[in-house]
Every structure is written in C-alpha cells, then in structure tokens.
Image (tube, rainbow, N blue to C red; front, side, top):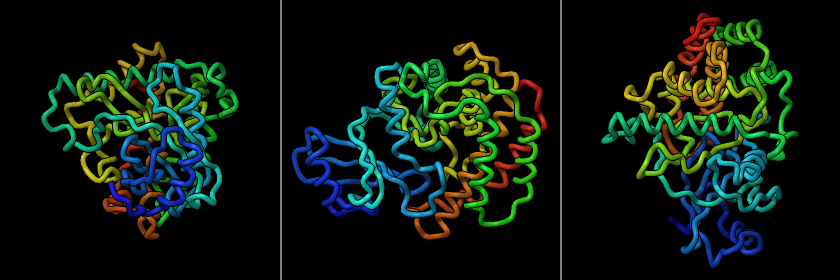
Length: 344
C-alpha cells in the first residue's frame, strides 16, 4: 500500500468522502491499484484497520453503457442475501466533483483469483474440476434469482435483448475501432440473421469468467464473490453461459496478457455446458449462437482496451495484446455461427 495517490484516485479527496460516508473509517487512507484499464479502475484502499475496494471508470476512451459503476453497485446491492456470492456494498458516490468520476465502495473479499495459467500451477485436475463446478453452480444460481423479487425489474428490457446486444456492440465497435475489419462486419450480419427468441429473462452478469470471481483458497469449488458487474442487466441467461464458455477459448489469451486460467485441464466447453444444463434445467441446444454473440462482444471489448492503450489512457502494461486477439475472436465467432443448430 502507498500513501501516494495512485492514478485516478485522489486520496485526500477520497478520505474526505470516507470520513463522512463510510462507517468505520478510522484515519488516513492508502491505496494500491489492482486493475488498470481493461475494465473499471479497481483499488484496494485501507485505513490500516479495514480494507475496502473502490471502483471508478477508466481515465479515458469511455463508451456508452460501459463502465457503469452505479449499475454494478445497484445489482450487487440487490443480490445481497440471495445466495449469489457478491461483495458487501457500502457506498456509491455519483458526485463527480470528488474524484472526477462516479465511484463505489464495497467490502474487501479475501480469497484467490485465477487470472492466468501461472495461477493454476500446482493445482490438481480435481481442484480445477471443483473450481469449474463451483463457477457453473454460481452462474445457475444467479439465473435462478427472480429479478422482480430482487427489485431489479426495471434494470433492463428482456424483450428484444439479443437484438439489442447485437446492435449495441456493433455501435460500440464504431466508437472504438482502430482499423477496418470486414470479418467482424460479417459476424455482425450473421448474428442478425440468426437471432433466436430469448430463452428466458434473468439477471445476467454480462462478463462472467473465472477471473471475475474470488475463490476460497481452501476449496476452489466455493465462490466467495463474483465481481465486475458493470455489464449486468436483465436478459437471456444463455448469453452469460456463452460468455463463460467463450473465455475458455485460447483466443482470449492475448486479451488477458497470458494463457487464461481455464487451461487445458479445465473441463471442456461441452462438458461445462452439459453441467450448466443439468444444474439449471435449461435447454442449451442453441448454444452455438450464444457463443458467437459472446465472441462478437469480447472482440469489441478487446478492441476498446486496445484503443485506450493507443490513446495512452491505460495504466500498467500488457494491453497491446488485446488488439492482436480481435481477429482470432471474430474468427471463432464465425466458426460458432457455422455450427448453428448443432449441439456442442
């Protein structure tokens, strides 16, 4: 921890806010930047007695509907006590005069995060299977929560969700694209031609993957917290499953700046899909479409990360590879569309 303000976080201004709005704050703050630009900026903040997590949008390259810390705070607050593992919510500051952007404060959750293959060194195949089962179980649990009972009935518009996702991510591409990519436009047209009727309407995380979870070090099958809810909404749950499985693909390695933690010893996508179908009771026959949609979305996210890198507004290293991942992700999406109508 450092008492020097990290980029994007004025510790003096933050302390002024904490002193009034965060119960239990006992003195001056220090902070460490945890993530620096692929998503919202995330900091571990402490007063020497208690630790918190502060989240704020990136310093530049923002796109509509992305990086919404207010949305993720609302969703995590609604899911408290639901059986879905989320951090405790403490404060949401919409006043941009404090830090120059809205920000949120949630509880620090101690645990293990598997980001790259290096983080899985020493783990047994049994432990990795336990991890996969826990992740699938948590996803199914999220999709079993009634969004209306949780107070999230107005979060999104379930009707037409898939078509809006296709249109929204195509619009995002126009905002962040750093080069022409005809294959992405073909994938967009293919998705529009193949869009099915929504399978259901539930709370969806929007970016569900192993490194967006905090695991119990003593039992990797127990998820202590799901984090990074900025893309959450009410929509088709199979879109979440498609995203989870797409992040199992080696094509995302360049985006993650190293081989993903879902290494070859992790259960294969087909096995994960079968497990989800069994736990949730949902029909996954149209999964190739949802996979293609996930690849499309992740490709646009990767291009946005790369665009912020070119603009010089990312913090840290490892962002150049995001641009290299985009063509491979698009190719994987086109291949998945080619399997449309077939079960994985």
